[in-house]
Amino acid sequence: MDTSRPCKSCRKRTLLPDDVTGNMVCASCGVVQDFDNFQAHIGGITGPAGTYVRVGTAGTGSAYNYKESKIYEAQKLIGDFMFKLGLSASKSDEVKVMVETITTGEYGQGKWFPVFVGACAYVVMRKNKKILPIEEVADLVGCDVYELGRMINRVVDFLDLKLPEFDIVNSLEHVIRNYPMFNEILEDVVQRMLKQGVFLMQCLIKWFLTTGRRPMAVVAAVLVFVGELNQLDLKIEDVAKELHVSVITCRRRYKELLERLVKVARALPWGEDVTMKNIVNNAPNVIQYMEMKSMSQFGQKGKSFEQVGFDLMEVVGDCVSKETRYGFDSYTTENCSVQYFEANHKSPLRIEHPDKFQISPECLTMIYSKFLDEVPLLKATSERSKGNKRKRARSFDLHACTDWWKGKSDLSKKLLLKQVFEKDVGLDASPPSFDRGCLASARRREKIKTSKLRIQKIMHPLVADSSDGNDICVFKRIKSGKKQRKMQVDIDWEDLIIETLLLHNVKEEEIEKGHYNVLLDLHVFDYGNL
Image (cartoon, rainbow, N blue to C red; front, side, top):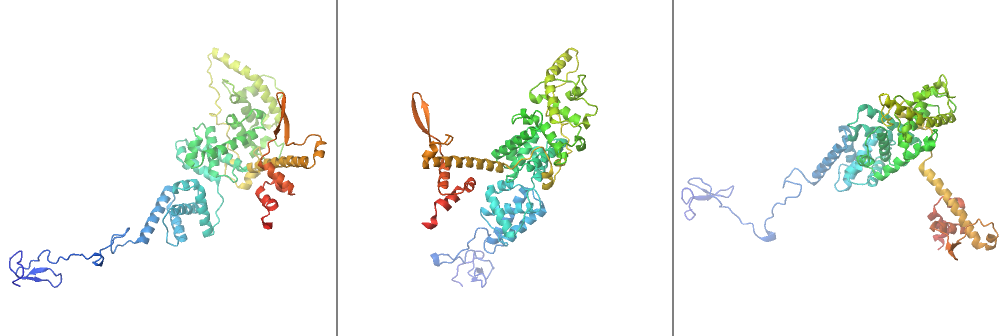
């Protein structure tokens, strides 16, 4: 003990090792000596191992491991998506249960998992008949509509679900009531837009313009058109961006809507003057006519308008009074329709009770023609009224006048599909795809006919030369100055395929369908015999 080093406190050589800690302790004063038990950890790979702290843990003995961290991040992502989509607490819980059920509690990480969560959210909302556009979900999760649609199909197949049909009318109501671009509009204007939009949307359903189409693009087209009727500055680009749909698709649906309204306007006396350019100005009368037709009994002709709840004098007077749509600048102190029916001129159409009188389209045409003759007289009368210091009425504003909209038709309310097709809106149209298919079949039929004539000319030239000359030749002569030269008639790849199929005795009815690749594989390239 005397040979040990002295204590740092009492300087006595009475240091002894402690049995528990191994530190040197002075037996005289009891002070523990510092740095007495230091051991150098050296020795390379054979030396003592340290502690490895893994990512996602707080070191040895942490309460979180990899699986728990993965579940925590997945649930955090689900909660964030549900908040951004505006789902309620109950719907969010359904989405969490669906995700946990499909993944058997393992959840997941990677680019596929946000798409999977978005698909589950869409399925839950669609199953409960709630509105959640697939475009909005795809924009949130960062994928396109096709990828999200494939994931939705996988979720539906896995859970063996049968989703209800997409309700495009509810989508329109949801957009008008919940989107920010309609928040600053007056409530009565919103109600009128809602009824007008539902009316037009159900007309589009009857005209098959929503069949097989992306619904939100149709909703955007109807919103833009209704906004124009109510003097709202709604640009189709802004509406498409708000609804997360393509601007080009919205423009196509908007054009199709205008084309259908132009066809409806053909039934009016001035229908020939209505075009794509001025249909918006004529839309009030066209929609009023459609509303009147929808309130009549479907399939009944010659029925009095008194039974459908319309004042015929008001309808006809409103139609003939709005001359501004044809480019006239008239200033009148009273409604021109009242002046027309109450004027002192002798008209063969004046009757005691015009609302009970059934006016034929020919009579309406006569009224309209007579009105056009009287327009210069009305303008001259308004000019003379300035000299008498009478109050000058402002120009008739077609869009500012909302009296044309009645909103009494059942089509202004949501109806069943069967009820929609039972209504008469002045036009029975077929689906655009069917029309294009008919045109394509007619075009192929003409190509088959000309191909048969070319084959006949080549195989039987004498018979072809003795014909009346109505056949189609491969070459024709044209004059260029004093010289004549031959120019080949345009024959495309489709003509060559049709000729090949005809030479292989394929039926013309099959060729008209246009499935060329299938017919070539069956009749021309028979790989089974090679």
